[in-house]
Amino acid sequence: MIHFNTVLSIMKNMPKIVLYTFILLFCHGCIAAEDDSQRLRPPATPMMRGHAHNDYLHSRPLFDALDNGFCSVEADIFLVDDALLVAHFLLFVRKDRTLESLYLEPLRERIRRFEGKIFPDAEKFYLWIELKTEAKSTYAVLHKVLEKYADILTRFENDKEVPGAVTVILTGNANLDLIRNEPLRYACVDGGLGMLDSNVSPTLIPVVSLDWMREFSRFKGELPPDQQKKLAEQVLKAHERGRKLRYWNAPDHETFWKILYDADVDFINTDRLELLRQFFEHRNP
Image 1 (cartoon, helix red, strand yellow):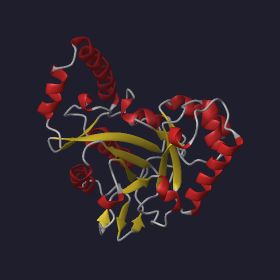
Image 2 (cartoon, helix red, strand yellow; image 1 turned 90 degrees about the horizontal axis):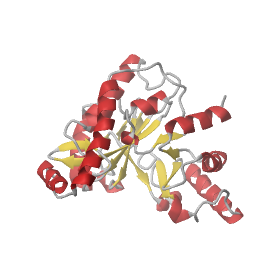
Image 3 (tube, one colour; image 1 turned 180 degrees about the vertical axis):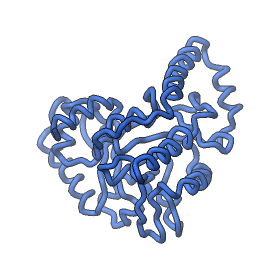
Image 4 (tube, one colour; image 1 turned 135 degrees about the vertical axis):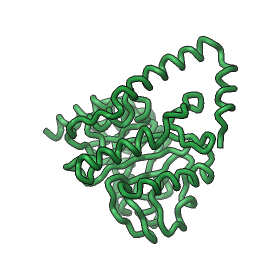
């Protein structure tokens, strides 16, 4: 766990010009998010394969993704003074930007509005939660928070899935040992490369997330034949074991998205929400 005074101490020791820049950028995003936090627009056409990476960095966390039809969003959390605060870096944490206020409460409100779903035409919605602080202590607090939202979450009773409107996937410092022996849980965990050949239940590890730059050479507009074959093999292995596949640390533009789309990769990672929506609309008019 991190104490808020520690964060303040780090900020005091930063060069003033760097600190002022961080504050201006951060506050701009916060103000925009707070202005629109309670506004719900009519549901967009859902995109099951779009993943809003680092969603909380957008001017309207969660809402920008929902307005563009994303069915998968990702938030990073730090455990600070027993609170789960959403930020990409520790320096950006704010006491009022909690996992509940930015994500869980708005999702519950939307589910009530649309009669039990995030999108009327989509069966699944994924909330990825990246643990940025020590796994065991962070998850202990997170589990208690998720219990409060049991009415909207997919739960797992002795490894049997009971579907809910929102499925939580843990990533970052999370690991299988956190949840493996829980008789009742409200989350699953994404897996690494080893899970492509593992028989671990997909209710525990439903997704494999791989570092593109570690698995493949730098992308230069097309994939060489040997890498096309490797990509196809990884997709096939994941699907044979009932898992979805996602690549991170990957190029974020249309030429690359087309390769993932054609290869049947389940989640296409992006920070460019509107452009990816337009990409999908072009292929699924």
